Image 1: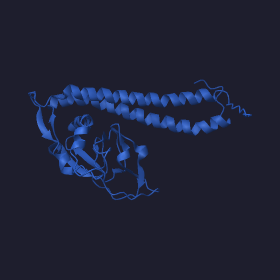
Image 2 (image 1 turned 60 degrees about the vertical axis):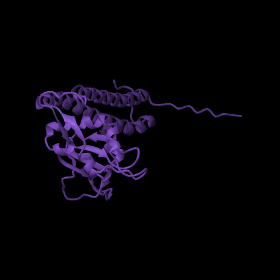
Image 3 (image 1 turned 90 degrees about the vertical axis):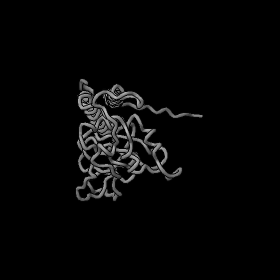
Image 4 (image 1 turned 135 degrees about the vertical axis):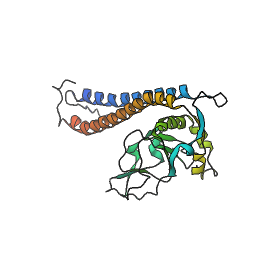
Length: 252
């Protein structure tokens, strides 16, 4: 048996450039996960056991009591020529909003269901995805969710991040609130509004937000940079391999 030997060569410097671009993306992803873990630990420092006496200023509340809106998204009408993006349940993973999994959607008039910063998103149908949560940590533009996702919008912005991190830590509990049988499970809006949890005092919320807000903004910045680096890598890779771009004399 004769095995052909194929020798592949790259222009000088191209391999190093590709490897460095590839390395930047997972590093940023790691940083985002680390920051998210730190923010979750911060939440746990403020959380209290259900049976414990509440500190002064703390009180029990429900999502419905502190939310200005709790509703499902809209029925999609896909249109590849639109500039409006609609997110489904695959866009909510690891407590992050993944815009790359969204689809273009026929534009409609502005409604209250256009997402706003710090909206909490909860997957609300189907086994395996129901109960997953994420929060909009960036300023969205022409962004909506479909009818399989519940939007929770805090009436007071000071409550938003704390409520979001509470949801991240209680996804299994949220999942347990579903109705219906296997394959037909739903999370009713009234069940979401009835979710009960402890809300810290105004002073404690101010301390929490002072640390949590910069952390989530850094996570968003890292996500954006990772996306830009991945796009740059995918654009440059074919040109580097073909020799169209020569980076042998470029110091990186």
